[in-house]
Length: 167
Image (cartoon, rainbow, N blue to C red; front, side, top):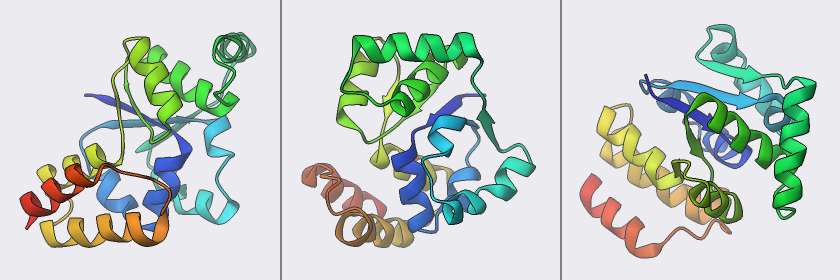
């Protein structure tokens, strides 16, 4: 089973879009780190409770040795937060796919030969797996770009392609 390691920005947007059930219905093993999870507001964290309880989402605590490695990674790329570096480290450790919309983290992951994807890939996966209908995918993508995360800056051409494909 493919492993997905989530950064906070995607998790937050999935909460705001009310798409957690659709996302966690995908056939992946889902991980994040405690450092990333602590970035979420308490109300947002509570929405993940059921997925943590049934082991759909695993929140990894870092050992002191792992934290030292995260800090070493951060020293090589100071533009990344400790949380970003923890997600990168966890994805490397699990040989997983990193899910983020942070461009700095995305470029760093690619430079280090780590598979990385963002919001559009998540939407594609949900649509292809049938956890979200085409109509709902279009509605939620519009909501994401126009209401939930206006500064996201998804490529317009790619968004238009998907809207056409999903209809």
